[in-house]
Image 1: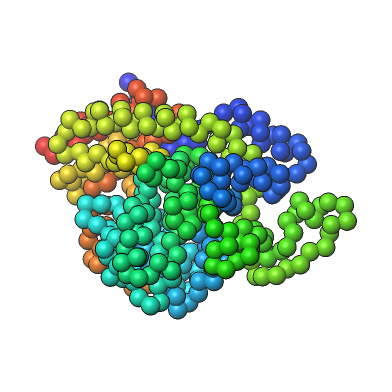
Image 2: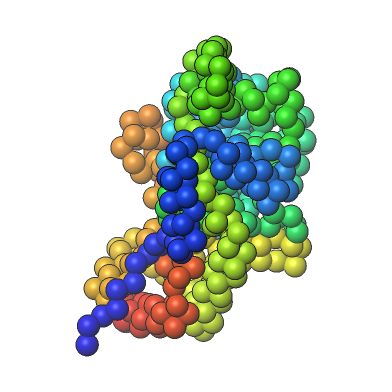
Length: 394
């Protein structure tokens, strides 16, 4: 009998998304325009924030914040080695070598007490990371800054995984100074490529209109977007800064608007997949089950199911991945800690300095989670995984 083929994270696209993009294509206006403005309005509403700015990636979102807030060489940024490279490469682009703080023991999250010790007079920004859909402990982070007497430090949270998650009963997006989200093809909500910045204080850092400053900088520093310039007689504009080119198109925004209208149902199905996996896996003493929610109102967005296997080393984990692949089941690893990559080795990082992050990595395997995955297939994946793990142990 031929194996099923189960991908890791395909997008959930319906006819409604296709129709919305076709409508934009037929409208004669395909770049940033009215759909983008509507998408930003709906994003802010969904995230319970005053402002949302949609861009072409989460990476651009993080870098744009650093650029507009004038982070530069000589400033210090504290972050975690347990993340995707985007979190730190945006700092490197600004001439800043991030200061990594290891994760807490047996945790995917940055060690908050370690942040306290890492802060210096030069520290300007902390970039924590929401992992697998689970928000950081934002209040704990703020307590650390208060205890250090450094509440001036900007908290720019990489929330790429946590769109739709809740922190103490409120949607993620307004807890820190800035949150950045990803709408990449493998994320819960996709615009094909895309990202967003959410925040509350539009006068942050003394700006008269931070939203305008971010918009202008995302369009080469040009004071009018293409849609405004196309209005009769409105051709003239100024260039006020050496900005980027990272705006979101109306095609992507149209896709995002439909996804957003379906999103709560998509989240419910993802939660059901988590429940299916956990029901099978929790019967095994070697399974370290990922966090989903607590009684304080904090809840994952169910982006990744990061299973850890007690007693596994890196070789055993890799064998499991291959044996599942042989059965047509695609899995992944989140994440290879940054100091293990050539770029970061060349910058002087050594994984030996981050033992907790390494120990999280060696026995982690991310199982498929997507809103078109049938629950019977999730059950099949979990049962096959249990068989293979037990074979490897024996």
